[in-house]
Amino acid sequence: MKKFFNFILGIIVGGMAGALIAILFAPESGENLRGKLRDGSSGFVGEIRAAVAQRRKALEDRLAELSNPYTSEVD
Image (cartoon, rainbow, N blue to C red; front, side, top):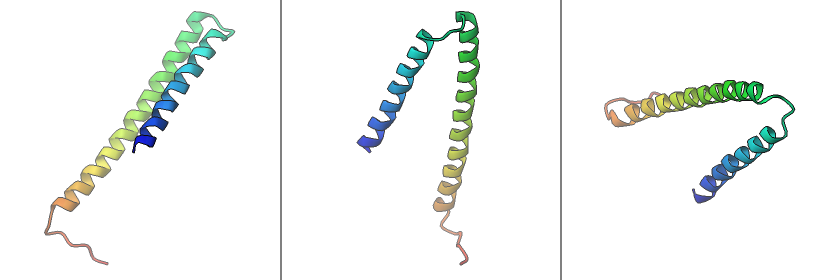
């Protein structure tokens, strides 16, 4: 589990370093670049929220299935 969290941390740090380098070497004006970054980040955050909601629903359904001892699966 520790390796997984280190991997995620590496992805986050690497992404931030890449974003910083992209901002520093971008050929566009600051206003245009900030607008593009704002649009991209809001889309990314929306995708993450949708994925989290979908996974949460699946886990809640599984928990409800496991917590009800009277249901039986038919094979």
